[in-house]
Length: 419
Length: 162
Image (cartoon, rainbow over all chains, first blue to last red; front, side, top):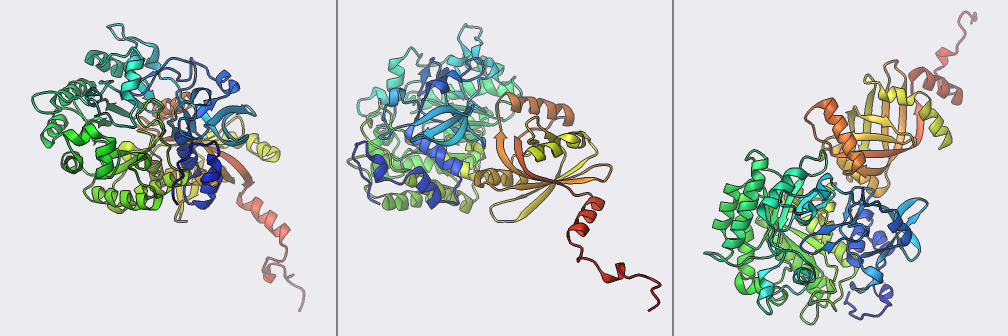
């Protein structure tokens, strides 16, 4: 279908509804479809839903690369099947995604997602970890240092990005720089604070299954990106000691490092998996949407570095993430969903043939990004692409353990790998 | 659900709690194949639902339970008590606990029981039907319900003189 780019309130008439997509794709988990749409459209909370929040139990405060909040709204939601919804809050019904958000409400004593006055599905709030209100020996609140998902510790050491320091080099969908400048976050986290916070967090039984690091690019150093590599090496080295020097379930999403830089990181730390997000699988769109990455590394080299990373980490332990939907951004994006699918899946197949997994994130248009006036594609497109990524991974025998529903929870396509 | 609950509550909880009870969980996956595995961690919850601790994340049982909750399929659980009474519960997975306070309680408990094992999921299964399948009970029930389903030699009167 051709994509309607109008921003009128009549969006529901221009794309398949949730119900229609679920009926059209009965082989796709309805939970995954609902999650996808909630992440696409965002949520807002009814008063009853907010009254159900217990800040002693539920996670409400978060400081990470894209978030910095201390209000009493839940950080996010979980579904009955254990699927996380990594959703954004559109305060006051802000329609930054181009559509009105889902309503989280309480009906018959249950917290539920509601759309057009219909209960869609029961959800629950993410719970707070034991370490959250503690402080490091330097007096830093640990929640400033380590953010969490239901089963993951997230560390964002560099909370700004060097690409945003060069005019015209920031990724156009990205809100990191705006979030950084709007708050009181330090640009770089203290390594001791990080290691102390992780040491405290991993004491909690049955909570965490993965340690995740990502942050903005650090271009400097003797060689390009050495500062970023060195920083991660120091952090991961400290964390590795907490596991007796052994490898531990972990994921780093970084700028695409050289083979030598990655080798050093792998050999000197307990890191187990690696991601370098290419963001959009199209060379021309990459150059337009991610100009800093394109100017300093380049599209073909980015892919080459991913493929070579498999030599170090092994198949199934390297992947790349896409911000699914930015490929339709005007004026340079695709205008036809079929053409976009064919092109993107062909490139995903090529990368996967090298052992590199391709995973998608649902683009929730950020009101503080360059693309703030863009509109994301219809739900059906996301479902079709998720099916495609899942099919390709099965074709090449690439498992999703490193980035699955427990270890990340942000990728509808990897959720499909649960069965 | 009222009858179901009364059946489940009478002594079913005790049977489930007995370590000598054998439980076999039958599930189906996306390819339609039936998978049966013996499980040792079913409990009866206060609300009448069953709970089951799945230890292995990538097990076929776990995959099939995910398939079931996704697509509204049922699973079958057969329980054989040490007194040879058996029960069949048809149930629908309604919740998968993978984190949070309740999950943690199960995680700590199962590690206390089994040692250094992990815990993938606490599955909550809502019974949709329950029947006792003990041999004598079932044989009597079926012969009463289907009096024609028997061989004639069992009915013939010996010494009739013919």
